[in-house]
Length: 128
Image (cartoon, rainbow, N blue to C red; front, side, top):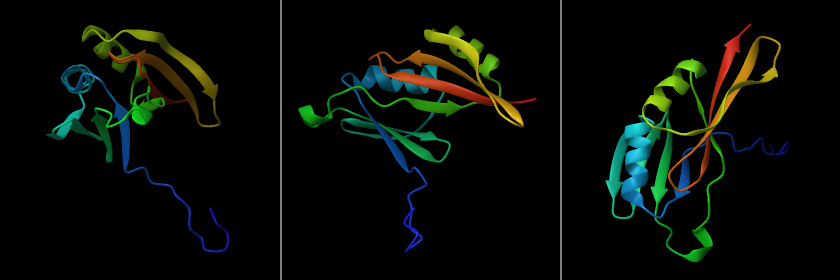
């Protein structure tokens, strides 16, 4: 944050993931992960990520054709989320594990990959 003006970025409005097969990726994020479809236009699909829009898009040029950053989805019960997603055919890289002990909760995380090898995380704050 700029201390002189008080301005600082904080709210994420949209995250974009470059995809090669839009139909396959749309099915993965919608059907397997259970995200709510907002709308679809040529070469792009948009989902609701709890108020943050997730955009899947076919890259317009080579500079945008690369794997995404890791997106962490917050879940209430990480073990239940792991079970449900596994039953839907989602392959996990790492099962839920305790990542950090905080003062009032434990942070748990698990990792998976989408059909184009982008890493995704699920995370939960578990009360202690």
